[in-house]
Image 1 (cartoon, one colour):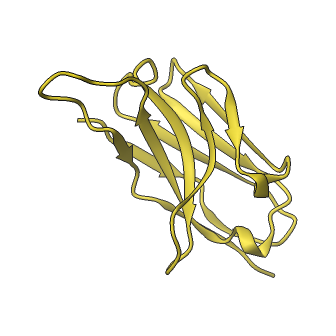
Image 2 (cartoon, helix red, strand yellow; image 1 turned 180 degrees about the vertical axis):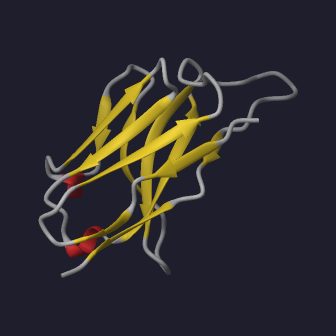
Image 3 (cartoon, one colour; image 1 turned 90 degrees about the vertical axis):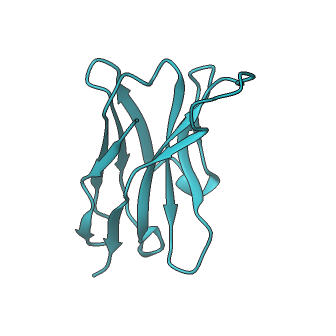
Length: 124
């Protein structure tokens, strides 16, 4: 069973920066694509950034060059550097591991793993 544990959230003023980290309990990067999502209460969870199966980084349009996703395979961690924070970036940020291959066996590993979330609040 894979566990994802996020850290690094907090309260920050507009224009500030935060670095979110996600530690995976096992070596899953070879089988799962890592990413970050966020969710505002009452709204759908949305993709922020991710690594694709081709090891390409993908960012949501609202990121506008402010966020950078990175990973350390040796440490089983994935991070999200968030700069130039805006009030509208306030949300709970979730680490995600999405299975990077199709499974055709009777029993398959979970398609997705999620962390518990870390709150980011941007306010003056």
